[in-house]
Image 1 (cartoon, helix red, strand yellow):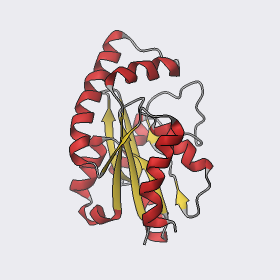
Image 2 (cartoon, helix red, strand yellow):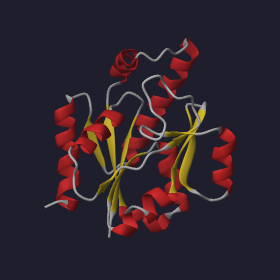
Image 3 (cartoon, helix red, strand yellow):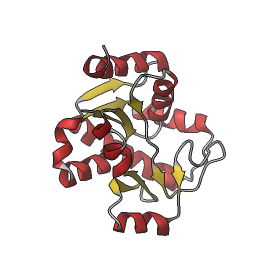
Image 4 (spheres, one colour):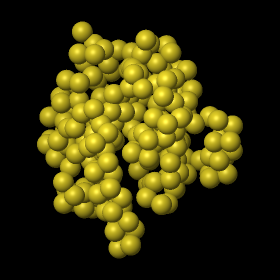
Length: 194
């Protein structure tokens, strides 16, 4: 039977970098499904490679059809979600190790709506100090208004507090990429790779 590793962390914690680095290792039996998002595609992103960018109308139609395992409105702006078939049907039911980014809202919904999956996933929180958040967002080159940044900062503080109480593992993500990767591999490998 497969297993899911949910990667969590505030914006700028390094979730995307970690997933990219894990993907580059070409670990056997590892599945990294893409998220569905209603936000505008960024300049350096490719639809269908980084994520699936869809309209809100299409997103809500798929929600109504029960296609999403979890979904949430993030930073009071856009909707992000994970399809059931991508995680369960194409993942754990086929014995795959699934690696997926999720936020605290999505995790809470998953716990409520799919208690049958409780023993089939492990949560890993990438923890960074709030001060590093601003530096990493600036480094991305993403412009945000003061109110948007303040909204994201408040959201981050709440997510850090809640996630630390819900996650199975907390990783110091202020370390360099290789150290963070090795910390996460030390969690994933013993359970699934010998």
